[in-house]
Length: 344
Image 1: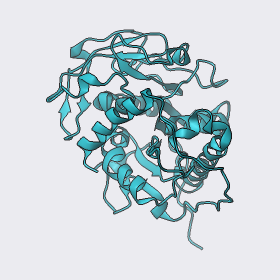
Image 2: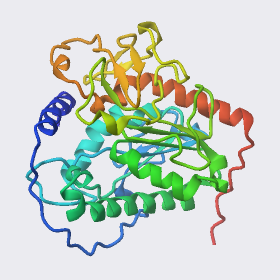
Image 3: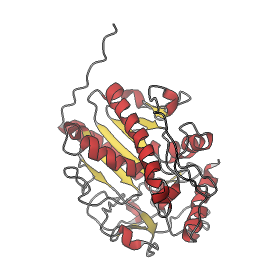
Image 4: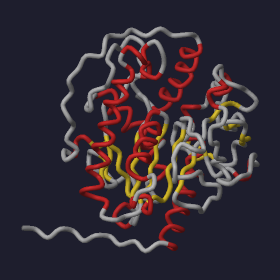
């Protein structure tokens, strides 16, 4: 799918989800086998390389940290009765390679060696009733088990003591919250955490016992999170967002607003980087974003929910901030990378 069409898909999804869409569904009934993450075909990006062998960043071989990225929900067709997408679903994989890697995951690729697993993500309908109690819970659990298995494979075969960034959007960020709870929160591994970027989901201040929100651009060991919406507008379910941690992804500090001059850059659908084109305002649980000053922005003016653009609107801001946090982490921590095992 052409990137422009994927941007337009965001508009279509906004109107659909605003009009009480009914989904076709089935009873969750499956006995899935586990996914082998030793098979590199089950990774969209592994150690900085895509499945076709291309480096996402030319610096991949020299980077001292890693980023484990989990992508958002692409299984959204209201006529699709599947609860989970097969790990090698051609449409999902194509969307990840053509849209997610260049417009989302790549924002971290210059700061850390990139790992992006394919996983059996749950359908969008699994997040809300009546579908949540009709199989949605099981579908979400299956998706998380894949993410967990991929992360465990990464830890056992690739990490070797390297600093870790966790990054995810929407469904990806939801799964990463559980990864933090199971693997990082109050454990030895937390000492390797550079930062967790949990965009497009609700995260409370007390979501974790020991991993706390970050409130300065160079701080490490905690998390940042935001949910983007059009300046001055509120979603239908605004109460759901109240109390959520809302990081300013332009200044990365406690400042609740930004100036156009502060904005480092939006990555547009044609891969044009456009700086100083928006401002933000932090409100209760939401990040209000001004209408971006981009070419042909007429179609954007109809969109209120900027969820699809949580990362791409701040692509260069994330890129520079991730690099800064890794630099600060390395400056203040002794990193002991374990040697490669000797061959038998």
